[in-house]
Image 1 (cartoon, rainbow, N blue to C red):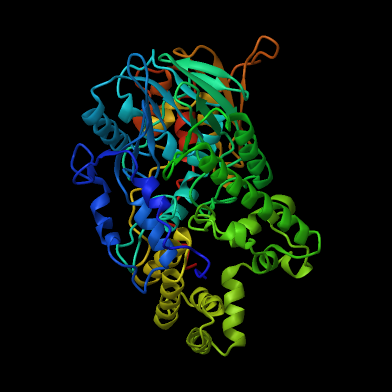
Image 2 (spheres, one colour):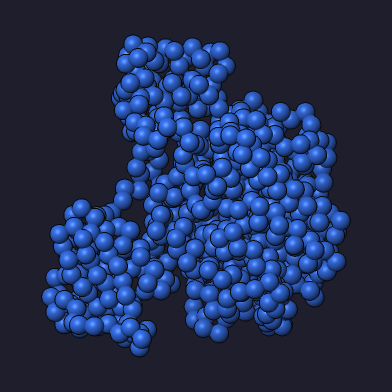
Length: 607
């Protein structure tokens, strides 16, 4: 319902255009060989009136997010917006410019830096800051620091690298596949298709890179000076990301809120998958930011959307979001303790009008429905306590029984269409999904479910729900979306410490195939110093690093003496040229042969 929303209020549009200096025209970014990785011109249709195929509130948010260019936040601080999902912020120092959050791709980050330099001069990059561990805030690092960067400090919150890896490598294939649905990758941009995701327009598809941090932020109050610019940090772990931080520029009276405050309700659990976030501590850190910096900042900006100017405005924005996250957390727990389950709470819980009518609290990216289910999951897990749900059949077996009980798939489809005609799209989707899973090749089931998904998507205020429904409809009609997916880019792997590389291998071991293959392998890394031992035993790959207190004992079945780049080349099938081998050289190939290679296009809306 939108009756309580003030569409006549243009404050957000005024703020989103304030400080405009210039845009990239045309807003098209390509790789060196001409492949497009960003096309902002695809969203030109948003200048028109809202059509029947879009929720008016989401359409408004799309118009705001689609404003593109370089903007002045305050003297010495600038933002490039809408050349990727996130913003890149640039802070001018004594010798050059500090880059905050270099987008997803090296190509878009380089274009954003070039746009800044076109208007502010060719300043060198003298510092790099990652606000948190999500890829849209570090992936373009090599676009702003393409060469020798040894003297450039790279700042990040404690735990950054571990969490960046766990989200983008360990579970990267599954998360990236679901991100196709979440961001509408492959959908046609248009009034009936993808019109953004609430947090921004979409994700770029260029080269993901990573430069490891050189300075860890470990405590609130820690102060660092980069290129003559003083920065005071507030560590906020467990909020929008497991490793995240806000920070103040005292000389500029400007506060960076990372992704802890945005102009929409965020996700307690993102639909692509992630660790469940702590909305209780999220609210607390927002309150702490107001207490710490409320009298020290005249403007607050974030890694998405537009700033808020004036202490009263930005503290009002933060406290509105504080109260929203606290409310959804506490009320979920209240209802949970009354015995309601996650889906039941999602049906009952509503924000009070004073929170719900705030534009910055609308569910364009996160939603109240899936957020309260996430709070339930954080405390209670997947099981709702009902024994009937403890050992249910998997989807295909459940679907076959539904079809049999309804008199076959044709009858099930007919009943699903009947519910759709009545306007009960939710149950129509349930029945028709069972029909598809019972008989995936049934054209009537697929087309009927796709039509229901179209209607659900076109009515959604939440951008990610819209994209999930519309991508689901498209895949039912045309098959899995063709997208270039690389969850273990060589640039990314090169930046990882050895223990994380081994962990990334361990989660790919096919346990049953490896169950009867046991060996030990030492990697003696000449460029890093030290030796790490891998043990494959009973289907599990584990590691141990020798120390003076616990040295490696005995001789491994094979010892490889090599550099880290040579190791990555060998694991990638490049052979053992230039590698010193002591023992059985075939074991590396044996290890590689036991690795599972996941399908980046696994089915989601079909079995």
